[in-house]
Amino acid sequence: MNFVKSSITLAVVATLASSGAFAQEKKEKPKPFKPVTVTAIKAAAAPTLDGVADDAVWKSAPVLNFKAVKGVNFKDNKGDTQGTLQVAYSADMLYMLITYDDPTLSVRRSPYVKKADGSWEKLKDPDDKGGDNNKYYEDKLAVIWNIDDSIFGFNERFSCQAACHGGEPGKPYGNKYTGEEGELGDMWHLKYVRGGVIGQIDDQYLDHTRFDPVKAPGAGRKSDPKLGGGYEDIKLVNGKPEFMNKDAKAANKGGTYWLKTEDKVAFDDSKFKVGDEVASVVIAPFTGDRGDIATGAKWANGKWTIEIARKLVTGSKFDVNFSDLNKGYGFGLGLFDNAQVRHAYTQEPLILKFQK
Image (cartoon, rainbow, N blue to C red; front, side, top):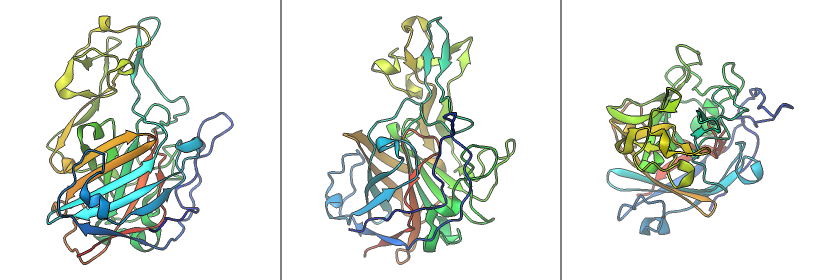
């Protein structure tokens, strides 16, 4: 088993200013690393996507041990973690199993809370200076693929350092984009509260677009087209959340920090007491291009176990298509512990190769 090495890279360490707020990062040059091979074996049977990983294929697939660094939170608030990666495939599907250490399950994503005067407000990270919530958020994972080897240096030296944050104005943590026009990355973005709980990964992509507060607030990070579904914020109407779960349970008293569309009803303030929290986001499965990645994710005993399944070939120009099983496919991992953008990440280019 190979163990992914640790050292300095482009995605910069998040530092604290004397006020307690995160400082603006200074952009650094990417550091080259040698690629690491990840071998996908042929699966006799598809794994069950339940976040348990007791399937036969995971007993025989090679295990890559990795380290991910330079995030926030995680063990002892140092921002680093470690885990394992396995990959398998069938005639038309790719399967991944990713496990990693995370001491806490984070699902308290900016809920509404009922205050002593009876009003409702959304909980906010006091240090968030713009798209940088590290206190009231969710656990996430991202797998970023180099589409058609278009991102310069990704496979050979830099992995996702080639499209990382740091130094640009507009957001405290910079913005994500590729370096040149025509460079595209496929991003499988597991947002546990907004999709993982319903078995889906948000299918997104990266291009070279730079940040513009009006024209391109997301910079290069964009979403694949969808036909329906997705997530949206619940608004305050007359000072109260517009919707609630039909079970009328507070999220911090046995309810959930997400609201499924089928469970949505008009809000009844009389059901809640001071200190109760309710979801601020309503969710439904994506349909169309954006909804073609399935997952089973489970947190237990300080560890995430995440199983992923997607067709080898989707035909979408926004996806990596594993159409040639004789070549290698470059990718990287980003792991988020209760963080909006400050992820830990693997540093070496990971190269997926298919065992015949």
